[in-house]
Amino acid sequence: MFISNAYAQAAAGGDPTGGLMGMLPLILMFIVLWFLMIRPQMKRAKEHKAMVSALAKGDEVVTQGGIAGRVTQVGDNFLRIEIADNVNILVQSQAVATVLPKGTLKTL
Image (cartoon, rainbow, N blue to C red; front, side, top):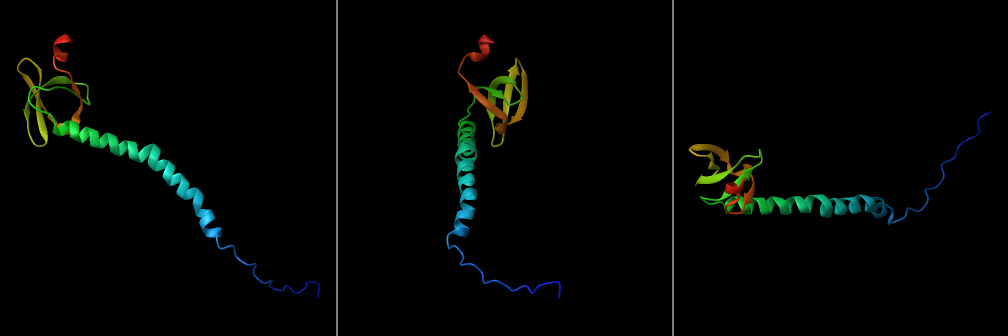
């Protein structure tokens, strides 16, 4: 009586590119994220792994904790570093942050 009858309208023709256009911003954000964050991080990790695998006895290194010393023994996963006369510490090889040029420790 007071309420008029509601009739369903026919669905409008769907846009065939609507789904792809909706996902386009997400895809573009992933591409930007890949080139700005993920790719450089993978490159640094690869360089660090190569540096650690190239460590040899006599190399002068700085650990991530800031300890500088000379490598006296190289193992598979650990290094023995001499930080002072007759003072050796055992650190994981992944803890090495930088390899210093030869003779740097004498100038410190």
